[in-house]
Image 1 (cartoon, each protein chain N blue to C red):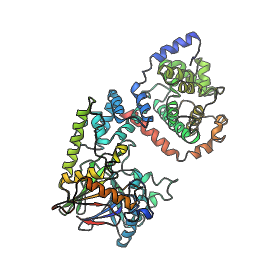
Image 2 (image 1 turned 45 degrees about the horizontal axis):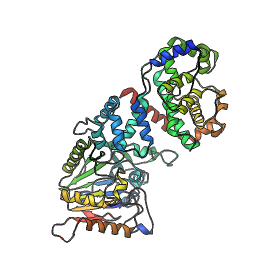
Image 3 (image 1 turned 135 degrees about the vertical axis):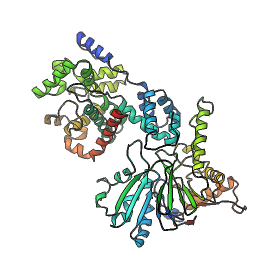
Image 4 (image 1 turned 180 degrees about the vertical axis):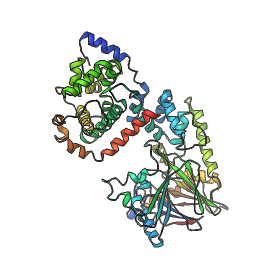
Length: 290
Length: 298
């Protein structure tokens, strides 16, 4: 999808996006294989083996004190024998999701809480797709959309620090949404920049579009967008993690019609929120410590 | 040592006329040391009738060992009546789940969530404790010593060797013998095969000399090709394994939920015949189907 911006800004963003790490192909492949019930174990092993970071993470967990195995496990193949193919698949899926999120800190922007926000939105978007958009939106895609929807902020925080800090200050001072402040100060918001990055990472067009549109009220509706926006609103309203963009009551009206106009009722329908938080925290922790 | 079967069905409880002979409850095996020490292997729905029987011998000191966290092996846990009676002690043992990042306490936690069960653990009056086990590290309770071994299933699964009073038994939990994930013409085939052989040899060593083997024999050899990777074994495969180990008794359990009594007996008889097994041959091991209420002195 073409994204058009003023030439100077586009050039500046182009450089910023160039500085972002490449999205590991292996992660994309693992997510694809995990969605295909007919994929065979050796494919998964072959993808993991080719990714040294993923391999090290898996071996580290298996060789940890949790199991006290008599022999040290030194290969992914061996790991599948000890813990089973399914366990390794699910383990790598966790690492894959957490591994693409950034680490480190940028002044004024709490990366760890951002990470938690992204993971919770991802988990909630997947759940909303499963319960409220069955057959219309792919839960796996919704998870990725949730994970990456705010990635534009990382581009700003890492490559346009001064402007991003000014936008955050503007958002707080004027009591406007962060995306509005970004448009004002930087000339473009994080949704558009996140979409540019997703495009560079060669994600499917519908995913790029969804990231692009998540703050655009005029955007063409889609089931995936409904799930992402509602998940984002829930996470922000309940203050789960921190996207750098505080919840404002006026946003409640923007809840997607498919989930009803009462965000609290949607939250209640999701059941025990703690398990989504636990899931996300576990991944956030894995990403930070392993 | 005495072994009594309270649940022998795999996957889901299957009560009804067609399963009344072998039973419809999911996995639960009671093991008693000669001193009365109580070990319970798995907490499928079969743990409920066991718990009713235990009410006549209060206070109860139960040592529950969970092979793995799939529903059919934990579902009876909240209905284990001794949990609710002060003076009882219940210790739950099992594996660390590397994917959820939690120890064995999660098998109770997940079931006691408000939406799914009305009682919280704080309201259970027995002394409840948890012990997450390590592979190959034995735990001793009373006269029995229990050693966990890693098996092959789509979640971490411990098989348990129980030793006591000079006798021993092994329960696989759910287990599919390790197999090569590569095709013979793949470059990685030989290396993987060597690892499979090594893993099997290590298990065989860990359980060598056991008198009784209780094995997940969900399928027949003919059914197996359609179930590869599902994490269960075959009657024929375990018969060969038990012969190799030299056990005196093999009990085939984890019966398919759709298998009616007559069909179960028929496939079992056929499997024995296909393996050339003859019970009247001198020194032949005993091979039986697990049945609710069946008791074996080891």
